[in-house]
Image (tube, rainbow, N blue to C red; front, top):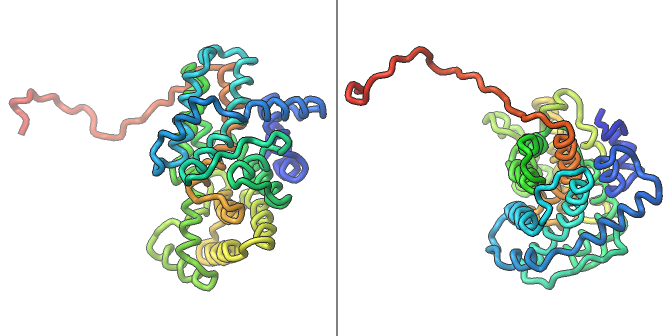
Length: 348
């Protein structure tokens, strides 16, 4: 079972909103109505970017990976913050709300700049998920698309000490500023064995191309000892990731209103992976077809993960600051010992 602050992820995904979950992670309790209304208003008021950041986005080469753009923008935001080194709870929460509000704008603005399209400013009456899709595509999303992205962000918002969250907490334990901690997390998330996995899944779906080729593809992959992307998890070894079940429902619903091909290929691959090696899909597997049917470019998949996870990162960083002890793992040396030192002139 996966819980956020003691609440079952299934309940949160089906009954809550991303803004409500972000509040829960940051403050530790579900908000009252007026608290949620105030929190939503605070987020909408922080969506716009400083002109310096927009200028940065226009100057970066168009081939720059969007995750590199995101972490560079975070660093630049830090340079504009005169309170960068103040770590009171109040100030940490201010920074966290800025991250949550500005991540979608950075991602959407850069994509439109690199594709030669006019920027679409935030629409304040739209919720967090719908506003992002609006800024990205220039048109308001369908209700299904809005709900799909909102649930996806909830499912990615937190997952204990995964690699990126651990990186953020290690940075926080040194009392590095919050921007540095978030940069550490985004850099770690970019790895193909972490946040980059959903993009690799999409590459796989494109390679398979049609459901009838899935079985042969999976069989040959496994015979060669190669990894089938989107399967297996260090935490959920013999049970299915609860997020996967919810994302599969999302992918199926979106497929019924859009292109069913990606979901059908996914289903065929999942069936074969289980048949040959009892492999179970993880959270990244169905995310790929969800994002594709939301018309999100492949190289933005990791950014969407970061857009959801930033609430969890921020909550972990704040917790680390408030109960801090330097995280310093030890390493066990496994090489030769008791070796004799020889002067340079005596070495062969």
